[in-house]
Every structure is written in C-alpha cells, then in structure tokens.
Length: 138
Image (cartoon, rainbow, N blue to C red; front, side):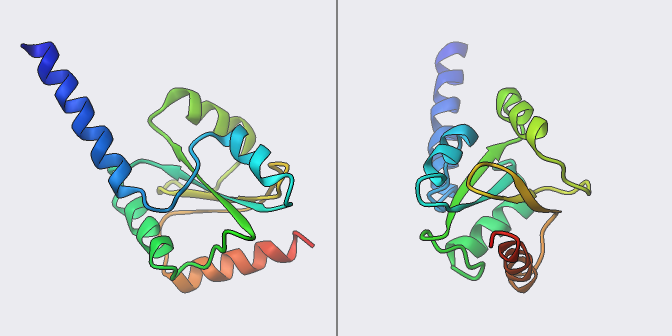
C-alpha cells in the first residue's frame, strides 16, 4: 500500500512539475551546450527548484515574454538544484554571487560564463542583465 501511494505521489509530482515549466527549457546542461553550438546561441541557465517562489516568478516572466529571450538567440536551461548530479555539474562550471534562488548564468554557446546574478528581479532588471551580457557575446 505504501509503495503504491509513493508511486502515485511521484507521478503526480512529475505531472505538476512539467505543467509548471512552460519555458521549453532544456534540463541537461551538456545537451544544451551541444544544441547551442551550431547556431552560436547563448545559454540562459536558471539554477533553482520547482517549489521556489522566485524561480516560479522568473519562469512566469519568461513565459509571458516580459523577459526577452528569443529562441533564435538563446537556449534556455533549467537546472534542478535538488538533483545532486545536475547541481554538481552546474557548480563545477559556474560561479554565482549571492544566496537567493534562482541563480542565473548567461553563457556563450560553448558554455563559457559571461554573466551571473542571484535572486528574483523585475523583468526590466533581467532584460538589462541580458542586454549587458549580450554585449560580451560580440
């Protein structure tokens, strides 16, 4: 009985998690880098968790296109900080100052970090952050 309840809870959580993430974000960092390389797209990497209010707010801004991340220029990546393998991969590559989720990194198509920030912010602040990082892409 406990096993069937656990399986049911996992299935419900998986469905709810996928419904919350409308950004069409990739979840595998290495696969995202490989997808970005051929077209020289930048990476917009969000390191957080599904249950994080700040992370959900950022996803909402992206979904509403208030934060401008055109698919022609960016590959969006969501890294789950509660997944030990994903967390280790992210932390081995990137440095983010601050202590509030989400940690956001903009990187070149090869994965090289250009800019980072921590925590939630208004759409205008994220758009400024993106604009400033894009200057380093050229």
